[in-house]
Amino acid sequence: MLHGARATRNGTSAVAALALAAGIAGCAAPAPDRDWVDAFGYGEAAVDSVVIGELGYPYVRVRIGAADLWLPFDTGNTVGLSVSSTLFDRLGLTAAGSYDRVNSAGKTIATLRVADAVNVVTLGRAPGPTRVYELDHPSLAGLAGPVLMDGGHFTLDYSSRRIAAATGPLPESAPGFRRIPLIRSSRHPMLILVRGTIEGREILIELDTGKSRTVINPDLAADLRLRRDARGAAIDHLRIGDLQFEIPSAKEIDQRAIDPSLPEPILAGVGSDILSRFVWTVDYEAGVLWIPGTR
Image 1 (cartoon, rainbow, N blue to C red):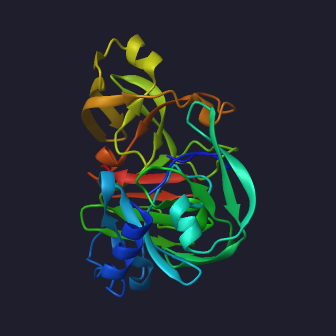
Image 2: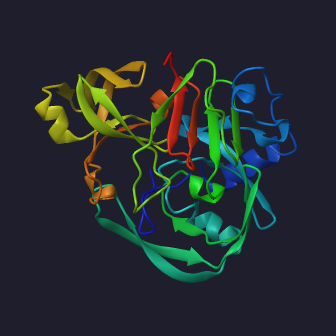
């Protein structure tokens, strides 16, 4: 969702984010089941809760200074950590500079504040003093991106409301899961990019929890002669590995400007509407996506 240190998007209101934190603070992470937690070798301390919030986004706990918040975990956010204008002021952050917010087409749409570095904790990681970026979305209070993990790997399971993050090598195999190589972006190394197909056409796809709806490039939709209406394009077969999905209405967005240096353009973005249907793991160090499969 939020691309680049020139970048895009925000989370529920500042008051809602603080209220959510107050309502859930102190609740224990769900007890690990004998499933993917063991398959990928996570200790109990590595597993935390997620809350499925506005627009179907997975929210994670984030501590900014002394404030505990729940913010959307946005895998398309390559900045790291951002908060709404209201929350920026409510937290007493000090502006140390500014940045240009750009959309997925590469167009600058706002110039916003960047705060002095503050201590941040999320997903069991304390990356040290971290800059906080202002965002101006009308409803979201902020975003936490995987840059805060500083490498390693994570597993996200919307259905059981769990997320786990750790460092170190994963097993060579995991029962019920298969490995798919990531396509790496030198500009945004934490983007989750894989090859998949739409209606049999092989393309580069982004996995972005910060999208409420799956998106498709308008030129590709036209070239494939997809059924289209005012809401978007109908995809009968979107395939990643052994997984196949039907998308009644994919939003038409051109994402090619996210990283023009890629050997092939990003032509689709799979959002939380699809990512919520299966358990998946990203290993940044090994450059691998793990999804359910037989091979």
